[in-house]
Image (cartoon, rainbow, N blue to C red; front, side, top):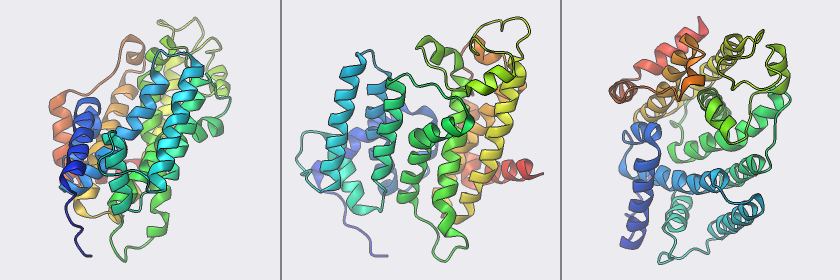
Length: 309
């Protein structure tokens, strides 16, 4: 493959802005992204910075109508990127970096449209009756990011089953998102959001929501959480099939990011009620250890073998 020329100074400055956003806002993501070569690290930072902009609109305090307007403007910006109408000296560094990334890598920009669609579901306060409905939402807000990242990583030439790589990247995104949903049950409830399927809440006696601490009498909150943990682990096991299709550094990046969330899932499984007391997190030293092991491929391989046992 012919090496692409380095970006010109204005584009490098735009990438540096996106890398600063990523380093500041995406603590877990940053552990994996550090393992990449500089061009891929820049590209993923551009994708993250755009995604973060979309998320921040959805999570902000603006009225719903204004959020919809801003998301519409963001979709218009994406269309400018798609049609190569963003100049190197554009005043929006995220647009400049994203446009350069789209020229250098076969990223499926339509996946960013899906991300906007998913955030609009949040803006409209949508609830989900079934897992199939929640899965559609997760594919928009997380599976899409997996497919975008794969556009930067690519697959090893000639690797067997590479045609399924987008499916595995999507599934790994679902696993991460479901872990996020479990971790953030209390925080999301504070914003009036409930993601877990309504039919499953009823099954475990949580007809008035899963965020009460302690859970109401007769409710099996721990059972609900462990049910979701089993689902997330199955998604991780399927998604980890992507790793052998990636080169060493890309595989290490994915293994580090997914490994952090996989360990977070283990902590939630060990103490389901912890998510009602506050945000469950891994210590910084443990995240760094997962990242180092990701470079060696240890955590991902062991996790995949454990899930298939």
